[in-house]
Length: 619
Image (tube, rainbow, N blue to C red):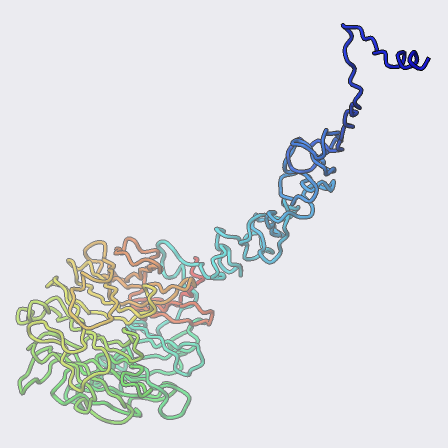
């Protein structure tokens, strides 16, 4: 039984030969899918809008994990983006262009509606608010007629063109009679007085308002006609020569008085500066010449504070012109420069029209030409120089000391005896400090030490017939020298504007610039002056031409250093043939005193002086 049981137990399992074997190992389940919640970022700015599920663990390209884009099609719009002026809500705060973008322009209040804004009243915004403009150059936002490029209207109190000169550019232009543009007139008293033959301007009492000194004649009887000078205060109000504060005339018919004085400091403590009047006394000084120093507030030649005599029979013409020199030696005291253009004794011999100039460092006491501290001379040249015909003084080189300019026009008499360089006239500038004997030039034309020589190639000219130490005409901060030659170029006349800065010798035609007469007979350059006539801060030039009787003042407004002619004048005032400039009404702008010695308003050639206020010369 046991055997049978074992046999039954150990019987092998029968397997069908074609049935596969089964692997009973465990098979793993597939992974669970991972999804990420993102937002569509269509413009790639890092901010999304519409939600989207992305397979995987991170947002893919074109999606973003950050929601909130207000315009997913515009890269310039998303939360936190800076606002710019583009008309869009860049930062998605539902407000366009707010806060005010950094690139927003400034707008300026235009209260007067002239299209120009006030720089002091501005706002920043993308678009101009009502009443605001983009321009900030209005100088007066309460005046619609005042704006850059606007028109100046005289006496309206406005800077019409916003040029920064106030109402100052009201100026005369074109061709006018003096009676059309003058603001006041002073009239001579009697026939042939010639009141206005010469005019000079200076401040005598130190009040800042200049006085006017007018030259003319005074008739004392048949054949007794003497030079007479009138001192006029408050020139801008007009009046008669009879109203003059002071009249200075010669004590007798032998005494001849110059019309253009120099002005010295107050020496007697009366509050007025002193006048240095040149001339000559035929009885007392043998035609040698004399300079009287007279109190400007009161006084006569017979009561002169000081008398400076020419050397008897030595210098005919001593005192033909006098001018104050601020300070040539650095001691702070004013000096007196005297021209003596007549005959002279040189090296023991008489020389016709030789001429000299003299500098007195302390002229306030009686002395004579032999006591001059400095003598300017041309000893190498025999005759006909007429040195000292015109003199003036300015600090041309900017060293703080006053230099001296003097002319030797030659007058054309016997010019063949002159060296060729001097036949058309010569002008000398001596730079301070001066030697006691300052020889200006050698016979070969070599300048003396510290001397600048101007000459001309026109042997028929009279270079230096007139002379004026002017203002700063070229903007370099130093004064210019105006040299007149009214006989140049077949009597057309010429004015040279020179900048004397260092010693040497030059042809006047080759340096600086010039203004020529237009046609023969103009005789441009009888008198000259410079000053700011239109209030633009630049000095202008006024020149007298004697193209007829009466003459003409040609005005050239500042800013140009180009050569011009009288035909280029900005304005022509017909009538005067003497002029001086000064600020008579205290407005900071120079005015014109125009002498008209042949005016016959009162009587034949009684004369007149017209006052033309600068900055208000519009007829």
